[in-house]
Amino acid sequence: MVAYSSNSFEHVYSSHHGWLFGWLWRKLGSREDAAELAQDTFLRLLSSKPAEGLQEPRAYLRTVAHGLMVNHWRRLELERAYLDALASHPELQEPSPEQRSLVLETLMRIDAMLDQLPPKARQAFLMSQLDGLTYLQIAQELGVSDRMVKKYMAQAMLQCMILLDQ
Image (cartoon, rainbow, N blue to C red; front, side, top):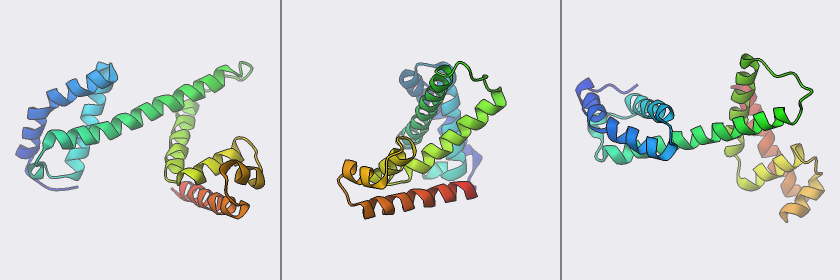
């Protein structure tokens, strides 16, 4: 954590919190989500960058808040896909809130892992795991050699191993 005077942070917070909240509210359409992301933005500021060193506080806050907003939307998209999958299997028993939370957390971690891969490696991994395609079929689909598909899969497997170690 960076040490700096609380006065500079308090100044940035009091000068820009209302603006940031309004900006987020307009983007998200939800006061609750806007308040939560504004709070998270200032927590990031508090733990990462000296407030007195900010030349353009609003630009910095908007950049951090935008990243948090993208993560928020991603999480909502994953949660929606998970709920749709549950709804399409009515014979399954609905998971408890704890199970649901664990599944969503795992999905978020997998999504973050996949985001670390180059686009073709991510696509090859998903085609293999979700569509059940062979390496030769993936190579034809992506317009690369099957040796390149093996390289992509090795990259993806390495990311999976890293994810498991965390």
